[in-house]
Length: 165
Length: 165
Image 1: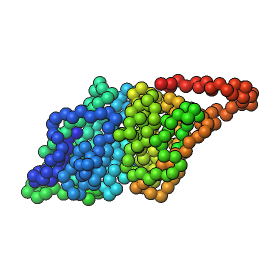
Image 2 (image 1 turned 30 degrees about the horizontal axis):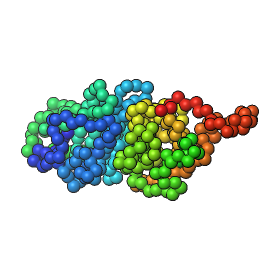
Image 3 (image 1 turned 60 degrees about the vertical axis):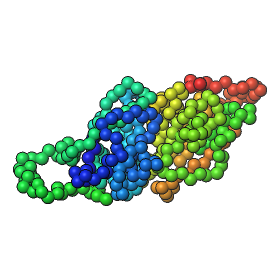
Image 4 (image 1 turned 135 degrees about the vertical axis):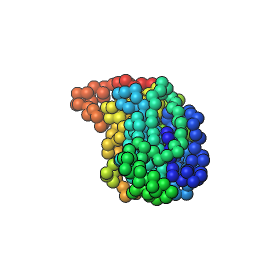
């Protein structure tokens, strides 16, 4: 999972509690929760704008197949979760493809699944991205736009995001 | 949820830890687990043949709809879960219809969903059935068979079940 938040550039510690780079082994039956409350969530964001539980990820095995996949569920009552371009409200869930972008507020997560051998365990691994993932993955910036963004380099980029807190 | 196990007729206490008849309020974000281990499961069966966690139930909201539904996932490595006539292996999951039969081993559960108003909570309610639910719901017994079953009343019924422990 490659993660990004614009405040990390200004030294904010929203991802301070996320263990970076090292793999972590988890039981296949475990539901992993992401959010603000460390008593409920395995992975927490140091940010008062994040819900106590923001979303959950859980492994499942596809019917009549040996493929393991992840299901994501939005557990935040006030913030939508964008999975690629699909908007999930509170308690909406969706099965994830091999590679997808998950977003809420200014948070960006590029989720990439690697197949493995075990049914009993899976591993997580987090990388911090120095740049916004949304521009890189979804919206390649055309040449004239790049020039224009150079000329306004010193100002903050304007984010068009319907899911602001 | 109407529950049945053949050993309850002989006074076995497999459902002793299941609170009968009274409704119980639970948070919509909670994953409810059924199995043998009381440290992990909200609802336990007093039976060594049951897995530590047998299956889980969780609420979700259907996309582009206000309907809340349940998803069931088999968390037992050794026993299949039958949902109506669909067989779920370990980590297989399926969304439940309004009314369905869930079975594993000799355990039978008739799950019936009632719509409500709240997004934050849902309620569970358990009833004990004195008779097998499978015969009642799926296989109405024809007249000649009922006569024949009267003549062998004193012997145990023979269960045809591919999912014996």
